[in-house]
Amino acid sequence: MKLTLQELRNKFSHMPFEVFCEITKGLEIDKLNEGDLQTLYLFLEEADKKGKQEEDAFRKLLKERLSALSGSMIYHKLIIKVPKGVDVDHAQAYIVYGLLSSGQSRTFSGRHVISEQVLRNMVENKLGAFFNKDKFEDAQRWLIKIGVVVSTRKGVALNSACETCSKEGKAIVKEAQRFKLELLKLI
Image 1 (cartoon, rainbow, N blue to C red):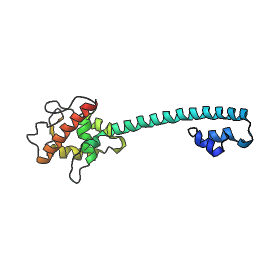
Image 2: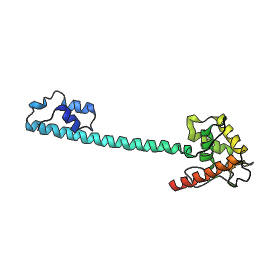
Image 3: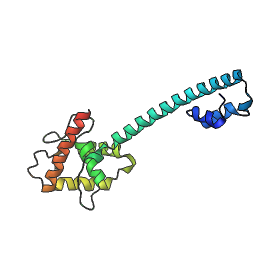
Image 4: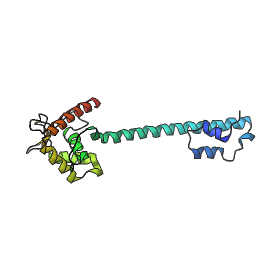
């Protein structure tokens, strides 16, 4: 059974269009004998198989990159409310990447402190071009003010006991603890 070019393209749709055109260029399908048609089908099947492999490899790469992107933006899953003037991304990243140390089982809370500079570097590395020193410092001041973060000479930590937290601070610490448990399930 002879197929039209359109039917052949539909049947062998995984190869790039340019490859299909190169193989079928100048062919008059209706004038090919059975042997030539068999040869044409073999070429098309081989090109289609290669196109399918390339398509699958591209999809796999895309999936990996999207996974890496979503992993690097996991701080958005920490749901907190911030007042006007405090950047929510920097507050979330401060807690997730600095204090909760996503990707590790360690949490900087209570007596386990992290130096402010190390925390800042961690957040800056994760936020990349979106990092803003002023927004970071505003978020840090606010988190300390409401009692979510305790600051000592040695560094800062999550106030997990939350004895000095405001009402909104207690809600954020509770959410941070829930978030950390969720993270630990993923590790």
